[in-house]
View 1 (cartoon, rainbow over the protein chains, first blue to last red):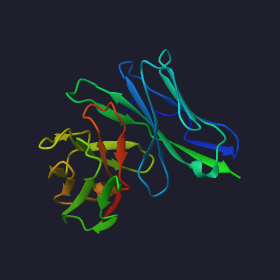
View 2: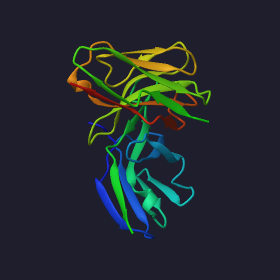
View 3: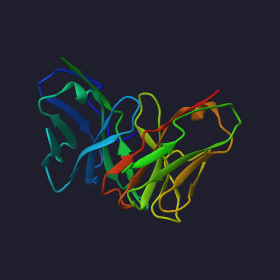
Length: 115
Length: 114
């Protein structure tokens, strides 16, 4: 199976709260990680990325944390809004011996924001 | 900018029929990809094209063929559709070919094979 996975398949939060979505990976050679947001009926939308030489990166209302020791990735969303309701995927750049490498996607976490 | 455009948005085929899914990007990206997404699963790579003139198999290539028509366009063909190919198909493009920059996705083609 895929090395990229998610600890929780669903997450429900109240509007205004902070959300944390987790992701585990198994290949210590992975050096690039991406978070995507997918709304119903749409394609995945890039949110934020991080390279393995960093352990934290911030965007607008989002922060990605990378813990290489335990091979764990998380996405934090500040002041979660109803528009943040979507499925969130993590993906890793993992060259498992192929000539090009491959982007592996986790199964996703459904985030639901309640008013 | 439109980004990545896929056509058609929906399609119903009977087993054995053929069809081509079209994809075009206007971001001058070098690499293009076809993924399929099945319920409860992540995206799985079917084929990719690292640059114009090259194509390679991904994780699940059986039953599909691709053509990188030019830098902008990358099509996916199902020669003889099977019910197992019922899925949502996403095309994506990327600035480089080494998975070191984010991929940009279209909004998908929802295919049902009966």
